[in-house]
Length: 331
Image 1: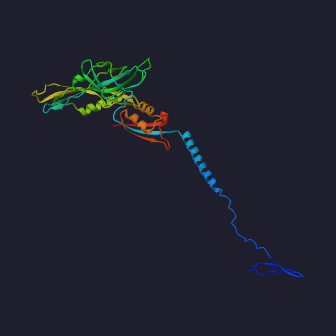
Image 2 (image 1 turned 90 degrees about the vertical axis):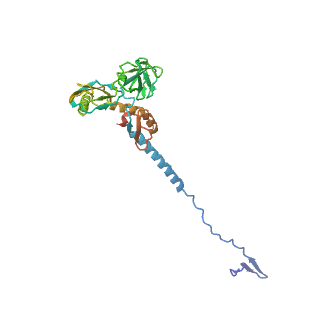
Image 3 (image 1 turned 90 degrees about the horizontal axis):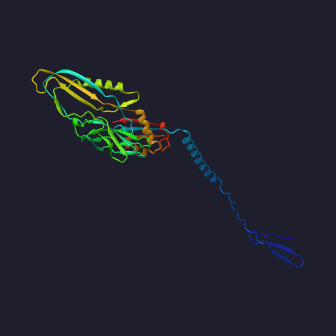
């Protein structure tokens, strides 16, 4: 037999026997401590990281597909201060126009002296291209000094033919002495393996006073009309056109007379080049280059400014020249 004591006191079991009573203390129970079950480790972080890497990989694939499948294009706006040296300039037939009129002898017109201009062609027998700087000085067979107006980029020769380039030049001194004949400059010059030959120079005349001038506006209009008939489709005239003017009168300057006949004869030696061919040549120089590299190359071609517009995400011009559109403007 056993009894249970109050919960606030130690618990005993009571055993009553015939000759004795036995108290047996119950063992104390361990306190129950509530514990929070361990949480499972978070599993969403690797999933998020995996998603970010996947998005980057997808964007890389999309970018690669764009660059591979979408043809690159570029537009170059070029402002040129003169005809680029690599332009293939060819001479047109010389033209002459004459106008006569009767003018009063009162008053005189002073015509200042001018410099003669013409073309100088360089021939390169070296198997590497060479550059002849603008401002190169030549002394012709008659002692006349000639200076080039443009840099000449002369292609390499190939043992069977010479590379050649033609640029404009002018006589250093003003006056008719600068109107040198063709071949006045002929022979080695400037650099090894380079020969230079000039065309006939024209447009140089001395300062003079004349009684009057023929109707210059009409003369210029007639010349422009004649020049336009000489150009083939797609070709562009090199301006200004070198012209020489000869004026003759029926009376000597100072002669007492009420009127005189004045005849003005103007002879021009025009030249032209193909604009599309020039733009294609410029495109071949800058194909595959960065905008910075392209501007440096174009600067050596008398191009003062160049605005380059590339496609989105591209940092170089296309390699194919037919994908480069050049807008060449002369200033």
